[in-house]
Image (tube, rainbow, N blue to C red; front, side):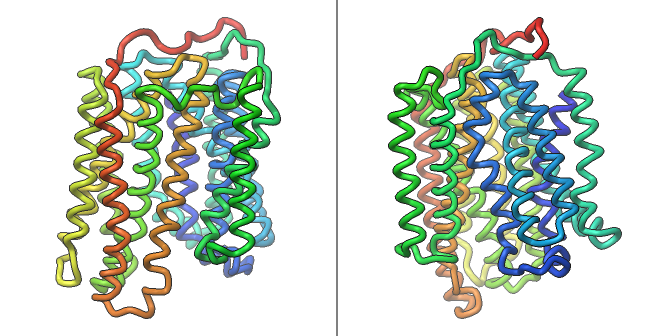
Length: 459
């Protein structure tokens, strides 16, 4: 599990470490118009492929897929460090993102394979702590490395960690192989990747680079819809469908997936609007507003660890889910109550409450999903869950950007506060939906054997 933890830190750290180094990257490579794509390419690469990668881990075994994913992430890191143009940087960041997505999904599924349902609670919380650790130290590490040596070293430093993870995974991780003969639904995989990619591009560009009703956005949405419809028809006839029929039905999986969608929307929406309120309404510096957000991010990881401990003791997910959703709702309601006359401490308290609530729901949602599906569907279920979460995050930041786009420079603090509050009402509605999902999900006790036993044959 130490090796799995390292791989999680690797993938999570690259989501945060690049931000502070990006101005120096742009200054050397130029291509300012591609600034945002250094982040977007990383997320698009992982989101577009995550469901397919999860399915492949079910078909070919976790060990093969996680080793391949770490290797792909390492290759992307090396190429990013050697980039001579912003276009190359963006393309190689997409390669990194595909590898990172595979690492994240494989790590979640490996925990489901190795441990009994109750034991998973403790170990899944370790995965959440990896993300909290990366979020806390990433910006500082990125700034230090780029100032002391070169921005290229924020990518090169991934290599020794990746080599250590590969060696540990190779020799310490059991094969975890299924007994099925792999059959790949290539048509379904192509449709899934193309449909998700077009949808994510539309959500990323819509209202920013292009108007929502412009031909490029409408074309992307049309392709995404067509790919989705074709995917449904292909999957019904496929021998080994990418997403098994009926996976999104039942008393657990659909509610958990929608819950993860709302979680992504609220969490990333808060990360967007919270610092904006602190900087442009209360007049704080960017450094100080970032510092105000850090406790919420760190405590979110701590809350995940506590949630895992509670669930491992009780064997039930639903009470923790409801408590977390209600805490999130209370935090967003608190944010709705702040105004330009509010204190910095009041905003910080609301952000921390949202962070605690989000941390409190992540692990039980994952555990409930793993407990509801058979061993042969662990990987694809984690992939679908991740797709819902990332779609919520992308849609949330896009929708909220509509409320504040162009407002920062044009509006007085009181008027900007009103624009931000309009976005917060979206988060409040999403929080209410999250509460509803936690009430509807069936509480299946965590008991029984681990999903898979390590195979005797090498994978």
